[in-house]
Image (cartoon, rainbow, N blue to C red):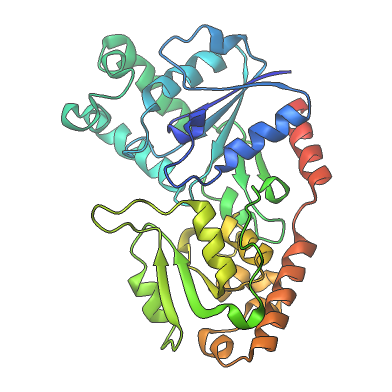
Length: 342
């Protein structure tokens, strides 16, 4: 089957990420190719005729007013034309703040000029089309369609152990697919030779780009050092994911800040997988990991009080819990194939 994968962001169109981490949509693309499908991942343009020659269109979404939405205008055009042509469209979300999709559409419905702000968005591909009479008619129709009728099916990245209703409840899609891509997580070499338990640092690693000072304060006092990774200082390079995973392997603790809007949903997070692979102890909010089991429910003070052998036991117990509740590769491929052929 011929499949086009595209989206609103550069990342969704296959350009990768500055941090070198593997986007979930890229995992789906590779898995679909392994299943034998002919998959093209690229940005679309206004009135993209070649796009409509595909059997299935997987279209990544971000809130339309997001600065990351470089290709929002061609995507609006594509969805309109694809549905009119009877093509199968499947939407994909890959950012935990996806509930803003609907909020942004309602904002634009009230104030259409927000989506055409010249000072902010003029450099986007398709801007001249959007502000033309044709583009404004298409935008009006798109808003009416997305705000009054069920959406095309939506793909969510999700571990099987979560409450998926906490994801699908945000968007009015006629069908939801919850896919666990863990088996396609990229492998990294860590330390050669690997550190012994006694050589690992008793420290917490927090790989994050946003300000998490309030969440860190909520954890209570820490005696271990905290290594903030990923937020570059002025002039410093962004930390690559490979280096972050090596840092996990050197450390006993990995912190996972709370995603409030999707807590308890099982939203897929690669730090869960890499903490388990490197046998580091993952500390996350109980609302997010309760369904994973007791090994994930220790607090900062509990973990820091453990001996080295107890830290190893806890890390192994967490890895076993996660391993038991993620999809094996054959399940992931089966679900993807079923989604495409449905």
